Length: 498
Figure 1 (tube, helix red, strand yellow):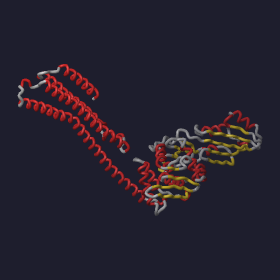
Figure 2 (cartoon, one colour):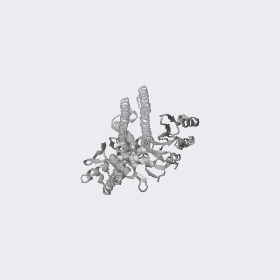
Figure 3 (cartoon, helix red, strand yellow):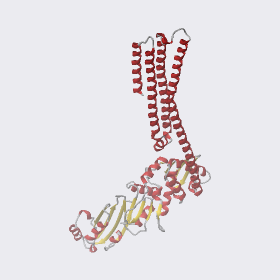
């Protein structure tokens, strides 16, 4: 304990004070009772290496001796050069720093006295300045007797107690608070209700009441839509089903753990924004009858009940949404299958039409006076070949119509995904749409079917041309060759595009 080390020599008029970042002690001694050099060396070695200590001695002639810039010989010379009846004034100053989430307190009682002498705003600013230098937590290494106590982020423990483990992410909580609520003074007081929520306490802790008051103040601030500290008042607005304004005297705030529970519920798990909206709706209605600082368990229960209803409604809507998407995908697969087989149906219809035409020509010739062995005259050959060319043109019309209709289905599929991108997460989209595996399989099946039906249709037309030329009484070989070459080029072009 530092004070005991100081009192180890014959000294008088000792005065000790400790502010947030500075420890100071002053005393004096008669030159005849001058401490040894080792006395001051022990004081220096007792101080944490993260802190800076300065010890100065001054005699009645205002000679100043800086202990840190000299050695044992120069100290002895200073003592020997001082008159025997003189009094030496000693001043000790320790500048404390936060290093690796640790901070020193050398006199806990003096530290507490200084904290309690400040206004709440100054206390919040002091702790904010320390917490900004740490990450998710801060350990106060106390160099004087103390019973350990702690909040969710600050731990007051005897020096050398060891490493503190905490799973609370203070940095993430600060980000959430900034997104959900607007606390005008947050840049000045970058602290959270969790920093002052005492989790381990002891009887007659002098800081308990102060910490509870700050916890309530900050809980209200981060529950509200917007808030600010104006002098001794906390003012804010809660926008819910109605707009509720409040104004609280900071020094009159009483402990209310329900307010912290609501704050903690909003920012723990789930969507803080959704939870904040529900909490503000309930509180804005409730505050028509009571002050915000009088909120009780019934309000908390009402908030949780409303949230449970909200979740149930969301789950219902979510399941309906997934069912609708599944139905659409099923309909899409069915439609594209129909468009692909539509080519086959049109091919069948076309064959029936061609054979119907040929049968009509044959029937007309049978009842005429022309012999059957001269059935395919030049005129009839040209006419049948024109029908086959028309069938070829009809083939491409049907193909492009099918491609257009299938393309519209694909566009609808992509548009559906785009519409639900704002509603569903990326994982949900992958799950609901099966990572587009169904679409990929569907496209592959359709492409294979189209190529097969196109090949059959074109092969039939080419075969029909060859047969007509063979059985024709007046074939036109050169003309048919030109037609076949044109048909083959068009077919190759279509197959490449598909």
